[in-house]
Length: 370
Image (cartoon, rainbow, N blue to C red):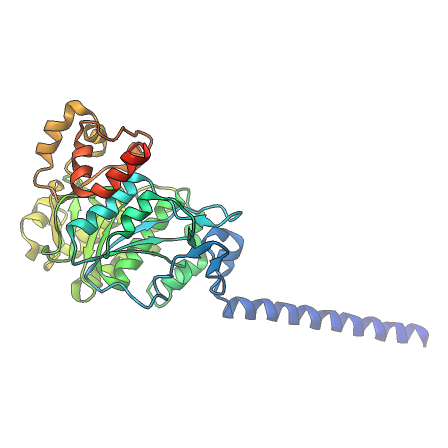
């Protein structure tokens, strides 16, 4: 009899334990279904997380979320830059840009005063009440420069790549900063249209009257993704969807260019039904109105020649090669470690003094190399 009672008690405890485990599992599932974050967010890269309830820390003010701000980017009338580094979560990420990055943004704003220019951080970013940052002051002096951040999961919501982002495959990348940038520029263009630019360009002239829907050739084979323009509707939106579709179907965590220039080249050539760069460049009708600029427009110097921008002996030749360019691309992957003194008689200094004068002056006053 006692043995039977013990058996009943044991079975009862087992059932209760199973019920308790079921309840715990249900709560966990419910949490992930209703939370602002996803499992990949929690366990892999907390630097990309945010909390909507903590918009400021004592002495610090967080940049506005671009999707939650009262002022949204005007569709088709905005230029976008992204900063996608994953910063340490030990301390708040305080706004910081190199002089070259700031030059990219200022040059876009200066030469395109009727466009809104957005710098979007992929991690929560703060400014300090007592922060002395001449470069930040230079950018804030422009009425058409907007500093925002974005939450990756909210940003992908209601786009064709939402479910793929939730899986967290992008976080397996060996080149996370670059592949995150490759992804976010495509989501940005899908959401707003307009123009995307890398943070290692200097804009040399206005692009306001250039019809949207274009990319530029690196060479006779490859298209670049440092500059992409699409309309927010029509074929621009169509090609934005094709970009996102290709990204998730052919994503490679191990190859640096596969989600960038390779993606753009494949999608545009297929969209245009051409493999000949020359045919795509000569007649936009071949691409249903989507334009492919030759390399002079955005990539007048190839990456092995990046030093020509900063070596004085190449100044005259480089300025001649770029006289018809809309902008120059400085190939940051190769050039970021090589700085020069403000005032050096080189091509880059000529571009900067004319197209990002406030940033150039701020760097000079601070004794910062460019």
